[in-house]
Amino acid sequence: MFQSSNRCSLLQTCLFNGVLATTAALSLVSSVECRPVRAELQDSPKALVDEVWQIVYRRYADSTFNQVDWQATRQSLLSQNYTSREQAYAAVREALKKLGDPYTRFLDPKQNQALNEQTISGETSGIGIQIKLDDTTKRLTIEKALENSPAFTAGIKAGDQILAIDGKPTQGMKVEDASKLIRGQAGTPIILRIGRQRQSDFDVKITRATIELPKVSYTLKQEGSKRVGFIRLSEFSATAPKQMRQAIQALSRQQVGGFVLDLRGNGGGLVGASVEIARMWLDKGVIVREEERVRGNIEFKANHTALTQKPLVVLVDGDSASASEILVGALRDNNRAVIVGSKTFGKALVQQLHPLSDGSGLAVTVGRYFTPKGADINKIGIMPDVKIDLTDAQLRQLATNPALIGTASDPQYARAIAVLINNSFTAESSPNPSFIPTGKS
Image (cartoon, rainbow, N blue to C red; front, side):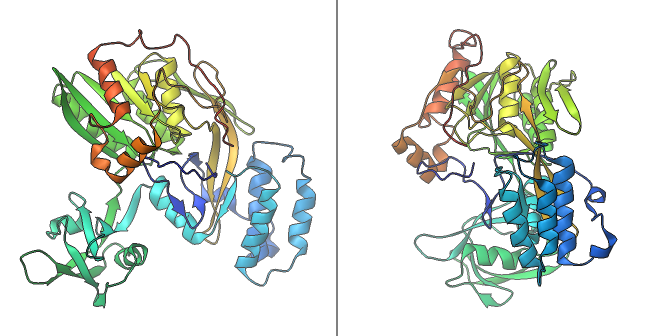
């Protein structure tokens, strides 16, 4: 999903220094596979260049390399003299462009670390706060202290203003710069100067820790006579399955009559996380079929471990992509859920993320996937059973006031509730999935 859009997304797409971290179905490989072949190149920029070349040569899905002579590309890369790693990075990026695949991409060490924290591990080191720049006061303000985080334990509250970080005043400081100062190695201390209404300013010493990034939020809703469990999943990180399991179990204990799973704005993540979450909803059936150049055909199935059989409606939009579409396709093709919303993005390519020797990384397209019924949705997308598009005005309203998401002011959610209440799991559903072009590449 590298094209910009003038439409408001319900979930902001994550960019790391220009590298798209969402809209991906990622799998991981060991760093053992990523060592340079030629010992004489060790510890030089050329070692990194050859490392990247070797990975693409062994793993890239298209054995023709987009009709590019990949051997000649190697000779060209190794014939150059690189005076810095930055020059090697630039050469690698130019070589990868020849593949014509925006999803096969090089990540410098900072980008690779950010992607690993955001998606791969689902964890980061810090104190567990979400901050914003207050529109009125222009002060850095706490939006939320994550439950059980160091900040939460220290008594930090929503609405608190951060006046200084380790003695450095924050007046005029950007959110991004403040976040860099607050993040740090687990176990190290930080002192925040806090401003709180009706109190004198005070200092709080907090010890940083490893923080699990929240990917799942859920709430119990009373919709007429039906108790509904509303779950939002923002990304398929390594920690998302555990959080999804907790959400389903907590809502089931509250005797919900059905679920609404919101995948709007979810650009993807880990294939394994998507399969694991699908198994929480599906008791049997195929989840996804994957074709790879190296491993051949792979089929993932449900394994009789579903957590609930309650009715399920899934919300999607044009930013629901990749790993989201794996889950949607599995639930749709196995008649487990009704899909409501707008047509999905249409990305059925799978990448492997390879760590490189200098801390950088390489995401390589290694294959493609198909829905359980064999549909190829790449550049096509999945048409919902109940199609309801939001107007630009409705999108702006939900984007500027997220509290309205999952309420009667959210037209797609309202339609999902109508499906649940009316038990219309066949009346409004087409007998077979419908796939039409998205117009996105």
